[in-house]
Every structure is written in structure tokens, then in C-alpha cells.
Length: 344
Image (cartoon, helix red, strand yellow):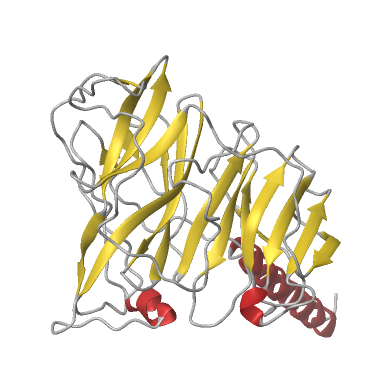
């Protein structure tokens, strides 16, 4: 083989390798991955505090400045819970009193004792809702909460949450909107309802889309200036709830056991304070928390008396924090914060 031919083949191989590598990099970066390994949170009866790193990326995207003179108090919000067997998934966000700073996902494979973050925290975005149709396939709604309108999208898993893929609603970027509702009746067939009022759209403010491919592609089914009535069932897991305890300043994760609500874990609503912001991409660091074991469950009846460590089904009290007024979240005025998980 001539030297010229070898050189040509080598150059061709080099070009192919570079293009293949770029494609792989784009594919791998399509969905957020968990950050550097962090020691898990261990629940033993004491409220868990989600680790906090004051990185500039999220605060800048949300348009927030923090300093020694004007520190930022950071709060936790959990928007949805779903559980299949011993697996529990929680999604929500970290926010100040005026804006969302980072999304947050927590997962437990042992019924709520050990918690890890299966997804990287996204700057200026919230994980607003979630649905699992079996122990392997599920979706999470990602709602950007940046200073300007941004496109909502889904994250999908087909292996129980080990890996996630980013699924766009629109092929063109920058349309903006809020993903109000979504529902999958099978691994392939589902719907999303978008409200585009924040973009100034009037005649086609509401848009209903349908997918037959599990969310990888979408077809516009209906538009209108008035709210679109959906026909899918309410997405609420009757056996799990998230309840805020204003006295303890915690978010209580509870499971229904017969006529009782039993605490499975709880998390502090106030995560910490950020002053000087870090520019680097370091992930949060946290040591396992230990404490006395949890106590018994509480009956659900209106006249039931609640023993220590469990919670009656009272309505959540006022929170010690405030959520940003705009852009809006998925929650409708009639929805309660303790009813955010889908039926399967």
C-alpha cells in the first residue's frame, strides 16, 4: 500500500473518529447526569438537610446576587413523590424567597432510609412533576425558571432511574411556555398540556400535544384561547404524600399504612445560606445524618390523636418560605402540595 493511500485512509479515519466522538458527546450531554459522588443521606429519625453548594451558575441564571451584606437563604421544596416497591423518587427544587436556583431529585432504594441524587441539579430550573408507569419507565417534568421565557421538557428513564434522556416538546427552541399537565397511559402513548401565556400568546395560549413514541416526538392535537379540558385520570398516588410541618420546619414524607400515615423520612425546609458564590463546578458534599429511630404511625381519622413521629392528614400549614411569583409552576390553584404523584 502506498504512503499516499495510507495517509489518506488515516486522515479519513481521523475525521470519522472526531465526528463520532462529537456525536457521542452530544448524546451523553442530552440529559443531566449525577454530579461527583456524594455520600448518601441516611435517615434515622432526624430531619435530613439536603447538601448545599453556593455555585454562581444557578444564581446568575436566576438573576440573583448574594453577598456577605445581602446573603441568600435557600429553601427546599418537594413537588412530587412516587414509589414502586422499595423504590421512592422525590422531585422538587432549591429556591430563595424570590426565585428558583436549582432543580433537585432524590431517590431511595430501601423504602426511605438511604437517599441519593440520581440527577445533576439544573440551574434556574425546577423538577415539577413525575410519573412512573412501572418500576423501569418514568418521566420528570423540567420547567426552566430563568429570567426570560424558556422551553419546558421531559426527562425519561427506561431503567428505573439509572439513566435519563432529555425529551423536547418542540423541535424549534425559544417558544416558551409552562407545562401545566402531562399523562402517559403506556410506555409509548402520552399527552402534555402547555400554557404559553407568558410569551404573550392569546389565540393559541393553550396547546395539547400527543406522543406515540414515549415522548421522543410530539404531534399538536389542539390549541385554544381557553383552558383545554383533559380526559386523563388524576395523577395522584393514594399511598404516599408530602406534607409540610410548619412547627418542625420540615417536609414530611409519609406512607399510608391501613388507616395511618407513617413517616418514612423528613427533610428540613431551610437548607442554608449563601453569601460568597463559588465559580467552580464542584458538587455538594454531605455526611450521612444519624439520629434515633422513627416512632410509630398516626391514624388518619379526623378525630385521631397523633403520637410522636407520625402525622395526621391535616392540611399543610403556612410555609416559612416563598416561591417565585413568575414564571408560574405546574401547580393549579386547586392542587395541594401533598398530592403530586401519578396513579399507575
